[in-house]
Image 1 (cartoon, helix red, strand yellow):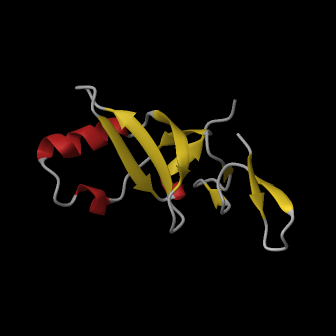
Image 2 (cartoon, one colour; image 1 turned 60 degrees about the vertical axis):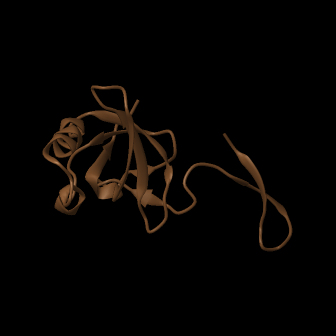
Length: 102
C-alpha cells in the first residue's frame, strides 16, 4: 500500500515498499510483501539461544515468508509462528533469501 509523504522539496511524493533498495542473493529487487525463501541464517543469530530456540530457527530454513518490511542497516524483517503458535520476528540480511516469483 502506498503512503503519502512529503519529500525534501516540499512536494507530495509516494513511498511504497522498502525505503532503501535491497536485493536478494541473486540480485533480485526485494519489496515489502514479496514472498521469499529463507536460504540460510548467520551463525551469530544462534549465539545465546537455547537448543529449542535454535531448532525453531533452523526449522524455518527452506520455508517461504513474506517480507514484513525494512529494519535499518540494510536488513529485512520476516515473521513466522513456531509449532506452539508463538510469533517470532527475525531481522536478516537480504542475501539470506531468494525472491519467489509469482
